[in-house]
Each structure stands twice: as C-alpha cells, then as structure tokens.
Image (cartoon, rainbow, N blue to C red):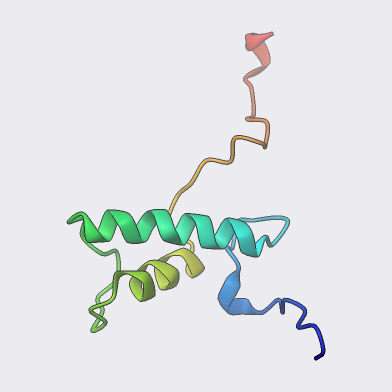
Length: 80
C-alpha cells in the first residue's frame, strides 16, 4: 500500500504562519473549538452546529490570535 504524504492546501494554513505548519493549524483550531464548546461566541455567522468546523474556518481566516512560545518576541530597543 502506498504511503500518503500530507498535502499542503489553503484550507490547512494560518495566514500569519511563516512556516505554514499544519500541526500549528490543528492545535490553534482545537483550542478555539474548546473555547466555542465552553460558551464563547463565534467570530463568524455560521450555520454549522459543530464547534470544530467553525473553529477551523475562524483559524483559516486569521481571526484567532495565538502566541508561539518557540518564536522570540520582538523586544523594545530599551529592554536590553
């Protein structure tokens, strides 16, 4: 059986993600889905009753903010 390689497509990326990491997309969308299941309001009008679908669409459109602890934050010039 042939191995299936992960495909990069526009549905699995975050607009401000320079590495276009599918893993990061999944983590951010999963955390957003938990927020939606916990009662948070959606950023988009939606007809979907599934929090995962809504969270993936919000993440794909760049409406969900996230912090990447592996990426150094920009420091002000006087911080050193």
